Length: 431
Image (tube, rainbow, N blue to C red):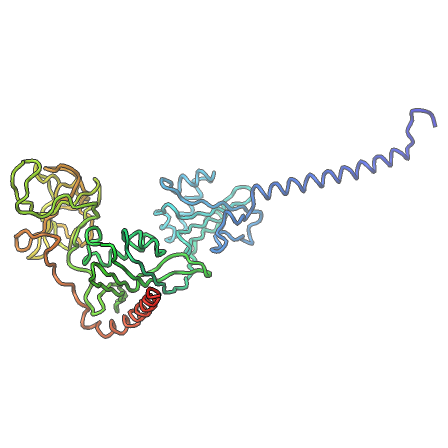
């Protein structure tokens, strides 16, 4: 063998080694790249999907799909969200045209969840809309169109009880008892005809509440209806129980069958304080003279909704130099209420309009002779001004005679549950 030449056998050995090494490096590189792809863009990452609700389980007919979950934020709509997902407008149009169920997509709200499932070519194969954990709409691609179906889950309902002693405020006491603010507000609304929750609440007042909790797969997802409640205000006991009548309507009654809903609200808005009481000998702050104040001034921020104190008809919805924007409601032949100094009158409120108790008729302002934002509220009985806070309001309507027997049987069970919990609470308090 001459110097400088490599034997042919050696060349074969080198070629074989190179092939082996090449396969090794190639295999390692492929595995590394595949791992990176899965970690950066997982098809069904638990962090992105509501696994319990099954918002985006894989479809067997669609392969190599990826899912993206979007929670709607304030100011967003479906059009802008589809653009952010780089989806063509035609997809949204076909989804909206998929059937009557799709009409619900015209009203989506912050907090609602959208799930987009796409194939490798970025085609949208499934779209899921969920307004909560119990129901979802599933839009499945079928050729060039989408088919929609609704899936509803039934939660398990369990009764829960809470008791709270008020030391500072109703809301602080409720929160310490483990109640969410919306439930506390619903409790307040039950007793709003009997208790002024801004002016009448005292340290030492207490309340108890029996309500529904909704569970899905043993996880608490929401609170349901209030079943019964008790409120002790300045030593006076108030009790309410839920009754579903024979037509399926829920209403609250006292245990003896008197409706908790009175003909008039004590205060037609949520206010911060009373800036001027009913006083027929008041010294007017603007005119510096003794002038009767035939109503109550409720101080509240500009724009606070003003509610109709009772069912009635709009007699006047207008503006004057002194009253500013104002509304007068007529309630039958006996009662009349007036709402002055509004920043504006609500849309649709005009003379002759029928309104129900609690309907927004205007918004707090400082128009007319007003020194600051407030609602001036007047209550008239047979044309004579009365103090809205102390006037004797019409008695609540009792349970109809046709429902009496059914009412007593239904509510006896609920009230017995409440009493059992209260007995247990008293035992705990005595220890």
